[in-house]
Length: 171
Image (cartoon, rainbow, N blue to C red; front, top):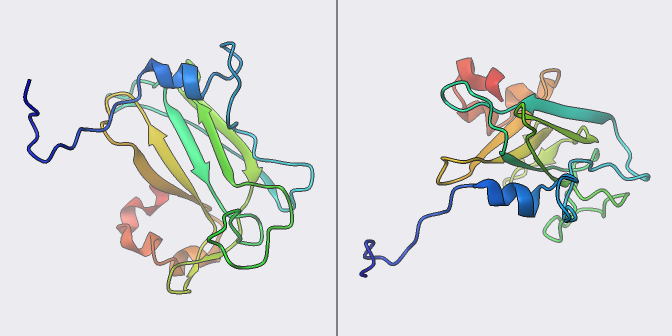
């Protein structure tokens, strides 16, 4: 059988039920979660928050087998990553979490409110959490951000400014 794409690239796979078993078992299977939805550690400083919601498809039906991942800075605006050359984080907080949706499409992350982080040009970005959404029917996962309504820095955030004003509340 010949390759239908002349460049040899294969498409991304959709998130089938195997993701629930392998990546987000949440105690339902004889398997350990590699990552969880609880990012808090005993030495984590900052305001503890819970990010929760429901995932719906384009027809308004809940998605019971969606996988979500978050990545964020600590309360001081530092990432737990070797590429972040600023001072080391003050805790074992890693800033990465993963969870699946339940049968009602619900998800939740227990974490801290992140601090202000610089963009590659050094401009301040408002506190935010990066969110990746993996769901059936999507050939490529979706990346978005979660912002906080009470942040004065939202008005000057260079990424949020790229979003049409009438859509910013959806982030």
